[in-house]
Length: 145
Length: 87
Image (cartoon, rainbow over all chains, first blue to last red):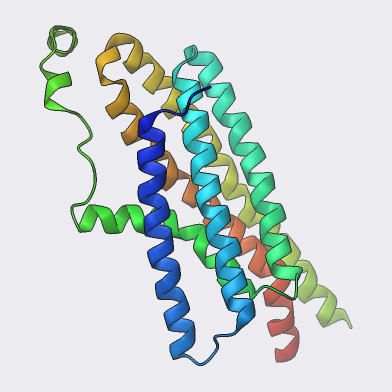
């Protein structure tokens, strides 16, 4: 299935936010004098997972919106469970593997939400509903109902 | 010995309780996407906007589960060492 432009755009925005926040995190580690190669690898691992998780979620939502209401629910719930299992694997690997700093792996999991909030604060978010869509005949009809 | 066992058991039980936070976002996301499908069915022109808004909403909702997961990981891997040092 083709990946929709909305999914590509949002994933790119989140990836940018995660990269910026990871750079900030590495800077803070450096300021604290705790920066070493394990922190760098951990940040790369955690950030890569955070971006992949968002992309998988977006792709599942794209697929779900093209299916029926009940199927959509089931698809999202299955996807959520599988992504949680993946997160468990990534989290435990980050905690156990000596080549990763555990905090640098765990913190990027929370960066998508932080970047969404930052984009909202900095007014960088896309408009939720376009004027074109609001003004369509079907849209007005739906609003009248 | 008994104190150590109690600390480890407490951490394990706490981690299990923290992971309960993962149930809510799954149900919520499924419900939100179901409603989005209905909305797109009624107004297909808005598909892009609905999907875009829902993506961000789902990402935010999912973080609640991630908080619980991170708490659980910390309780299993980090907290026992700290608490046992305190004893």
